[in-house]
Image (cartoon, rainbow, N blue to C red; front, side, top):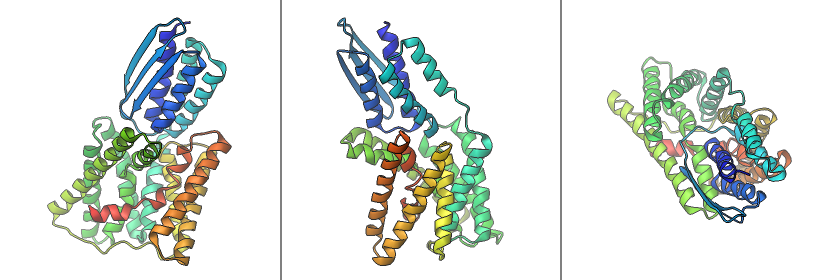
Length: 358
């Protein structure tokens, strides 16, 4: 048995999981389980968002150390689901290095998301939340145009700029310019509400969610790294918006209000979160599980807030529900809970507060 190749093959799986958006503790646990299944005497794994280090001791006493630098990548929860299943297969069947490589390539080479789905995800996410935060029909049309721009320019820019702060600054600047032009043309009525919906597309929700979960697992270094990456992304958004406002001498703030109709709130946030499920490349029935989770998360928030007008209490109870829902769905579908949590929790992300702070 070629232990060097086995260590490398398992490390490939861990690297792919991290790039797809897996939490640090999930990657570490998966690597530990796979190395243990092959009978390594000792195995030490150290994972942070940008690096994986592995040292193992073979039954013959040989020490093998491998280090892998992790390049940033956009989340792909469909691939993460298949990688998670591959980890189970490796632990149960302990394939040789050749079979492991073949199974790994089958997952990595899965058919990519269709381009039209990517555009639909952006439109549903950006426009849906714009309506959710009180935009009218004309505002929603502007939000749709800006959402399409973010997908088109964002995909082009992602191939040329890996710095999240710069990436967000450029996209938020262009978005704000389009919204200001629409305002001057008399098309847009609530420019700040439009931008709040668009900000939801740019917020590093995944990094924040995973960072908090890593902190709860007492993985403080990885947790703080993920959260700091999210703060840098938010700083880029603030810089882009602020620069556009200063250049065009356009200041406005009529403060956001949620759509007055609760049914429209529920429909728009469900549509938006369905879009985010596609945005994170979730496929099949898991998309609809996210839609259901988002609908009931906001419904619970609305009911609790109506009974006791406390944003903190309503948010806390809704957050407990969505966490429990994601846990149940992960057990039913034998998939990482991240797949069902990240998109479903978006109605509770304080996009308006972030915008007005910026």
